[in-house]
Amino acid sequence: MASDAVTLIMSDHRVMEQLFDRLRAGSGDRQALLDEIAARLTAHSHAEEQRVYPSLPADLAHHGADEHHLAERLLHDLQRMGPQDEAFGDRLDDFIATVAHHVEEEESTVLPALRDAVGDARLIELGAAFEQVRLEELAVAGISVS
Image (cartoon, rainbow, N blue to C red; front, side, top):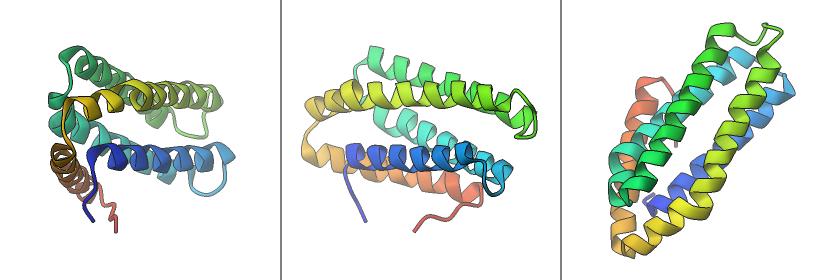
């Protein structure tokens, strides 16, 4: 189901927020949740950087990519320490706050700038390109999305 880039990106943000809630709750396999978050964050970031950000003003694209890289570094720290580590909760809070800041900024500044920069038809094209990269990366990670 094709959709525009803004809608797809925002939908991905909501999925991540749900995964964060589950991870914070501490129920289930926290390591598996962390691995899924890593796969989804990487796929989302790469799809944005490769397919969507080139349509943005350079300063917004660079800032968004920098925030992705910071979130990925924090996530890798979490993965190295694992949910059983006593510092995990504090690091998780830092990671989630970093991603939440990026999401808020992206939804309030970056995505409106994208809408202003390109027409509706181009937003659909960018959405298809974003989704192709995202789904390919998720498939490599063993995550199927319907």
